[in-house]
Amino acid sequence: MKNMFRVFGRVGAASLLLALGLNLSSVTSSDAATGELYAAGYFSAGIFDSAPGFTDGTFIADYAGISAPRGGLVLGSNFWISDNAYNFTKLTFDPAIGIAEPHTPPPANVFDVLLNLAKPGQPAFDAARSVIYMPSAQTKTGGVYRSFYTAGLDTGSFSLPVQLAPGAGLDGPRPNAVALGPDGQLYVGFQSTGDIRRINNPAGITQTVQTIGKSSKGGQVYGLAFVGNDLYLAEKNGFSVIHNATACNSGCSATLMPHSIVGQSHLGIATDGVDTIYVATNNSIMRYTLSTQSQVLFANSGALPDRTIVPFMMAGQMTATVLDAAGNLWVSDDTSGGVDRFHGRLWVIPAGSGPVQ
Image 1 (cartoon, rainbow, N blue to C red):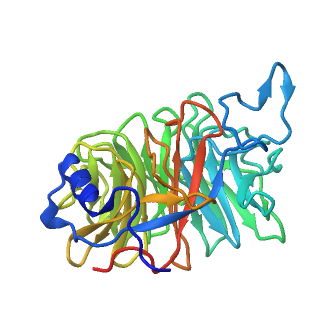
Image 2 (spheres, helix red, strand yellow):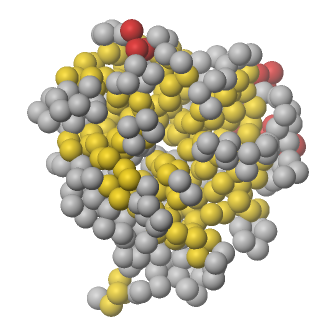
């Protein structure tokens, strides 16, 4: 796909970066990518509405959409999204409207129906064991859960979820994100605290939990990703790292990365596991190259089915950032900032798009 710069233009992009307080010398001036709309909330008439699927007590059967998306996984050919209305559900492409929608009603996946696992966050998938780990930030029933996944022709199937380390205090701080480390342990970030905790033996029968460190200033953690033994954080204060996190047992505080936009929430993170990290912040996706410690504005807009170009709207915590095995980057936003249901959108940026460093 030809690289395109949309919405702000070259002059507008520079103004945007200056408004963010970003040092322009750290950003390559190059064309940004444009996302392609994959899923969005809608009525069959094409009108957005804030009602949660009901009007005057009557169910609207053709109402669909995603709400306040916080994470996702690509499993086989399907995209599963952590959704504030449907919980963890598969998106199904509808050729009649040209975009995808959640199952309506949602499939009987165990995260949704059996446990009513509300407010799911950024999950992790252990491909070697075919295990999904899912955080739930629900106030009373939250925690971190494990389920075995079996690929199928349609949705696949999940085993009955098991809560990890019950009684170890993982539910109180409201877990937001998990990442599987190269050591096979599970690392957890939270909504109500800056703690980073490690769940030992997550695939086993019993687990132990360690608090290994904190975010850079003890603020919320929205996303986690490993490159080698280093754990990278998308957090309230910026983009940070705990070096050699797998060797940390306590007291390891994250440090901000060079050129991080200090004081601005970074809401999502994805990596190729080698040298490239994508972080979502302030309606933009930045691409960070570890070997050169440099970053570029990667994308800040998407194309609707009618080819209208619109800016990303990554307000609050409404961002999922997922890099699939083919190198496609999946990015979500929410036009209501998560205030209204079914206003979320999911964009895909094809592999090979975006600026060239």
